[in-house]
Length: 324
Image (tube, rainbow, N blue to C red; front, side, top):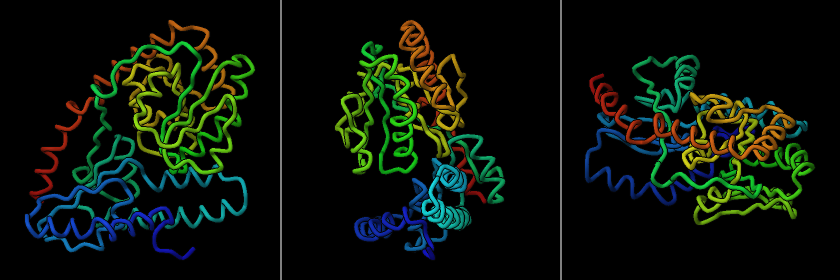
């Protein structure tokens, strides 16, 4: 309480000043840069620590809207202490986001929904905010064989509050309903920075892997990828990458937010524990349905989220910023 920045940003700023700042400023002295792209959203905390030439345009590339993400996290907290803490965090995050937006010459967001949010919350003009869909390396995340042995996979950085929350929710509320029907199933929570609390969820049916060398090894084995997010904003790489691998994805409305997906066609959306469990069970029972959704998912990624289709949007936009 009382900190200028949200707690989760303070460490990033310290790391930047300790390890990266000297190198960055050395590069800036040697060459004049037209643009500095700053991503993810934690990094605008370092702008005020740097002296940039007047002609250098600062572009803030977002994958969340902090105002939305923290509000949703607050709504999911049950205890008085958690709610007290997240009220401070949410207020600090909103102040930080507003200040960082004001310092940025341009902002890149990952969906048209987020573009409208920035325009509404921070009074930015249409020409200053660009929507560029998150992209996927479709050769790296290639079409994989369909899983057949009832393995469910979730991939994400477990140090990110929304991901840790999603794992707890799935293990405690959703997974028991699935195991009743399919006791041979196994759930893998894959990603770095798992807390001791998350590791304590491990059972004969649940594995919390910690950091892995290649997430594709787990996506390859997945029968279904579940993304049971209850909070967060922006569009989710974990969803896009699984879809690119031709895996059927079962997620919440928040997990699919900002994506032009079609429920029941190239993804499955379920917003209660019972709905999510029922949909996973139906996919287990109908392997051809799994195959169909997986194939449609990859087709969707190739059409809408291949980097070769996404990145050209930036060129004309940044040139226009230089003229203002």
